[in-house]
Length: 491
Ligand code: FRU
Picture (tube, rainbow, N blue to C red):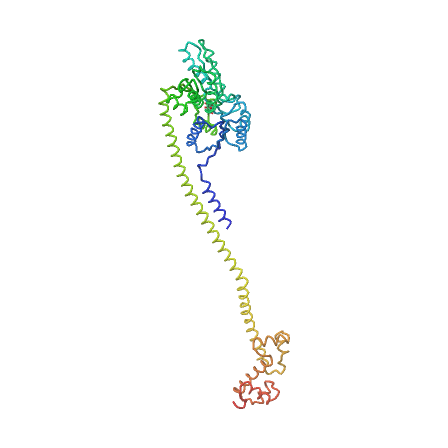
């Protein structure tokens, strides 16, 4: 019974434990924001994950809050994720949490926004200083055809974030290095948001009527600035030349539409981040520091890039459909397997129930036999043994009686001593085997001998009565008649 239960259990575990597609690694992704550029990065990660069924990701978004991002990273540490991908909101404020994760033994990939020091496992991100240089190059190309210093408005990202700092620095240092007429740059802060940019640019344009050029730290703010220009008094649609950064679809579209003039690409490469994570988790060699290329995109480049973009999106969508299909096929297989497991378990349980029932009834029958039938059998056996003893006793007694029919001392006492029994035992046993008392039995044996003597010899009734110890011939005749139904003389 125990063996059956153990085998069913093993069978069950084997069947349920065959799921080889279970992800082995949990990756925590901490995103500082959820704008279009980051959604692109997330989509690239998801696509790459299709090739890595061993990994699963859990993403948390800090919505521009350093505190929230630190708390989210700490919760990933608590959950003991196998690897952490962080794109910090403001590097210095989020760095302590990144360091905590790294010191807790969790490999950390810093994506896009670098944190200082070396307490992280790998970095993958664009070259923000180079982006600043490209912005400066563009300004200088405009300045080159103007006689006076052009008035430039810079719409910067969140001040504490590395891209905002480095883009500004790259631009200013490149401009400063240029010997010619310097563009006059003034900065406002758009904090990466289109709406914020619209507001700060509108305000600025109300006060300054000579703005010729705007450089925004990302495409969304560039579009926000373009809308502000369109809506501002003394300006109007297309009256200011605008550059963005990122090269997201919205930016390329804005270039194609003529809303903005150009953008500097800033790659997100979510696919590369996941690939690096896979290498780290598999203890394979990986690149410690990856700086992604950036390039200038104007109207001529924007159109083909847009087409490519659409094709890539289509690929992504197809991939997604394939993934959904394979997931649903996988689900079907899982469901099928579940049905098999349930059936096997059901059959095993049924088997165990039937077996236990059989064992139970077998035990019950055994008990009943022991309780009811065995004693009866023993009684029968005893009875058989008893009757054997009685037959032997009856023969011995008959022998003794028959040998002493002519002996006047033949009585109960005599029989008792001859058979080694007490008087009471003689009475009980003679009664059992003959159905009569001992004296009646002795008299019966004497009468039978008398009949024989009368029949086979010339002896008279008196002689026979005397010989067989009857007290008188009259008493003999009376007994004879009682037994045989007629007098001895009537024979
Ligand atoms: C979005 C974003 C991008 C920018 C990048 C830099 O959060 O502001 O537009 O290029 O982050 O980290």
